[in-house]
Length: 97
Image 1 (cartoon, helix red, strand yellow):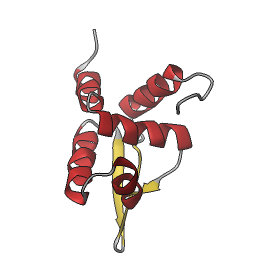
Image 2 (image 1 turned 180 degrees about the vertical axis):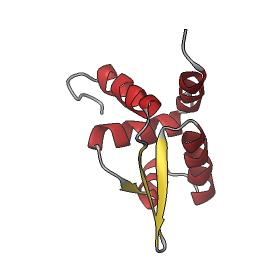
Image 3 (image 1 turned 90 degrees about the vertical axis):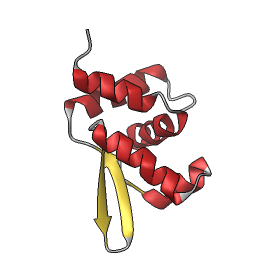
């Protein structure tokens, strides 16, 4: 049975926008500026902020502010590694990722 942190992570990833954020981070294995997600998802800055807050609570992403820029990366947690591995295994040949 999944532990509490895994349940929070799966719940966070149930939202398509949040899944796409983590999918991008898992695929690229680097940090991304928050603005990229606003553009890629076609949603408002407050919506992206809310999605990132949910992913932070689930310990999947880390958000860092540098000056006026905000950067997002996968968190250095077991649950983040597990979710990234799960997403990568869903696209073993890199298709659709």
